[in-house]
Length: 339
Image (cartoon, rainbow, N blue to C red; front, side, top):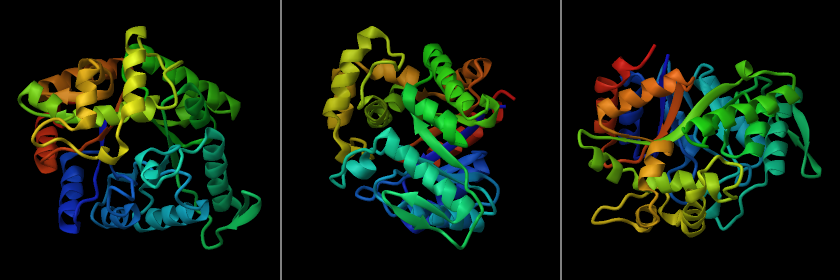
């Protein structure tokens, strides 16, 4: 059966509680919020509200990083959230994007990401672990929390297959990208004596819905630029891009403005939206990195992907009216998803 997840901004308290409650009631199986301290309200305060105001959906961080917090802090916060949510929390993590770039810091290497995740896992198991030349400790809990990596390149996917409990695949939805991502996940899984069945696999895309297709696309351009930046800023090779899109995607990743990462243009296109359009990437990104269009477009795409084994889709959503978005998906799409 196809399951949807949703992640959006942590708004003011009452507004945030309203939309996460609506998302669970609408049938989203995973509800998350993001970690970008310069652009958004605090992730862990928001996640606490999320845990306390939902009852059965899975919840999580979408996505934190190994740079801005010590692993003991992240592991302890994750354990606390897992406790108050009744075991529904999972920590999502990657090398970092706007959450660290707007702090004036650099993205983590995959080696640092691996060290960070392994350190958290050892803290849960052994109460202490070596970290950056010292010893990190976490003594009040020994309950592990599922760790999910966001991965959009061969090496990151293999790392996720090797050490993570789950993965948010950011490589796109083309047949080549889906098959390639699964191959690399399987390579990593085999390195630790596991199979793909041991991984909880979600496909991470951007989303917008409207009765008018072009209106839906217009409201998703900024998010599409954001996922292209995250996936391709480290390079375009080995990521199953058609040759004709490699140069414009690399240019978008180079020129992307991280300060506008969570913004959509109101009286015209913002700089990131203009990049998507001017570089001729709108249709390609909508098709391969988005769920964008009318309810019937969504249903058709969900059915086509279900036939290819893509059954869990996690949407990043920044729209003018998230309540209308949730209601339309809940009323007009989720009841018609393939089972």
